[in-house]
Length: 293
Image (cartoon, rainbow, N blue to C red):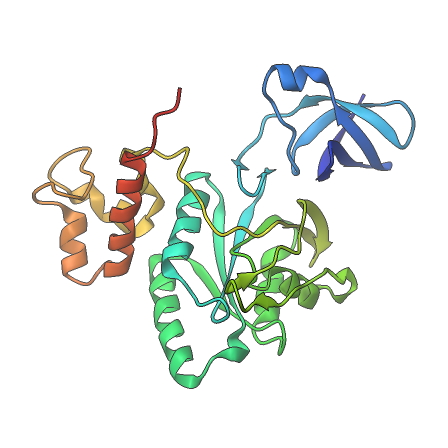
């Protein structure tokens, strides 16, 4: 038996890369029985019937995983958002950041379509991006069309497995094409009727880009906090987690509790008010979530 890494999953087949090349594998029935689904990025043990086909026998322990997009063992999540068409949304960005932070994956924020910005709009977007830089996030404003900022992204890819994730139509495939024109990934225009992009990526696949592996994933428009508990949410907001140590009450949720250091930091302008508003909305969403059985 041989060890390899799943680099593509499509129609029930798993394409495993090892030293000898790429082998098309199926998962054994034991995975269905144990409710273990192999994911792109998994390191696996497989048994090959020949040099082209085989069966996955074992999935090695994961250091992390995401549900949507379904991928494991990523070093970083490159969150791709557009400055325009569709409009930049701090709410949606914070939603993605919470999912990534809670999964223990390092996020990097990329805002595309800088070429569409007026000087006034660019100033507004830069104001938001500076907030995220102050929190401690790496942030790059770029354009796949003019290649502004693209070279800033390249060093982050070298030697790492990265997942590209973001709302539909923000230009993930265009950005990957700008990083490596040989990919020729399919792109689509924004639907003027729906105001969002059409899905151009149909499956998760790891591809070689910039000296590393990058997952191009299907775009999606919503995320639910299915795996996060209310008491853990503040940990996914680094600026809140930092000051929460000074809250009077242990287990403070930073909502109605007295002498809350997080609320004081918001009032003093140390935490952006919109970040705190998003936190309150997310915690309410978690509290109203239907219990899992």
